[in-house]
Length: 201
Ligand SMILES: NC(=O)c1ccc[n+]([C@@H]2O[C@H](COP(=O)([O-])OP(=O)(O)OC[C@H]3O[C@@H](n4cnc5c(N)ncnc54)[C@H](OP(=O)(O)O)[C@@H]3O)[C@@H](O)[C@H]2O)c1
Image (cartoon, rainbow, N blue to C red):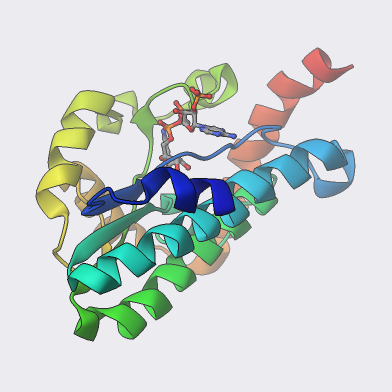
């Protein structure tokens, strides 16, 4: 954190996008996952995001303006659980809650803090297991199209789903009972695990 503060001293950081995250080791029960990899996930998704945010805030406060975009995940917004990716989705729930609280703290001081929520987007984060079991690949946004929509949404609301087809998915997901979501997610993610596990043995 000290190094980041030193590196950005004198720079006018107007916008911070906390995009970096890790979702490996992937679909596993918590007791099966390598502890070091889980710790790394928490360090990147939770600690790094928090520290970088804390480091840029003093400059934004001094100037009385700025925007921070934290990238969350549909795994904590559209569905009530995300089994087998439990630690990943828990880190994203942290991001969502942190954003909400920070926005209340800093909005009056001229700083917008927003959580943008992607559902599936074609990037390196989509593992072969996810791709192999995907039901509606047409719903998956390309990274370029997603990024264009995401840029347009900056400053519009504390929590947003920038992609139009993902907004529709969000609405439809809200019509489904939680128990059905839980059952379906576990079923899908067990398929991911079945593909992933042999590679770990
Ligand atoms: N793709 C999806 O379907 C999806 C869905 C929901 C949410 N998200 C969220 O969208 C955001 C972007 O992910 P993505 O889909 O673009 O995944 P990605 O292709 O795996 O990219 C992750 C990015 O995080 C960076 N990163 C990881 N660990 C880092 C570290 N220790 N230090 C610095 N950079 C690090 C990576 O940098 P390097 O390449 O240099 O390692 C990479 O640029 C993440 O917050 C993710 O949780 C994605």
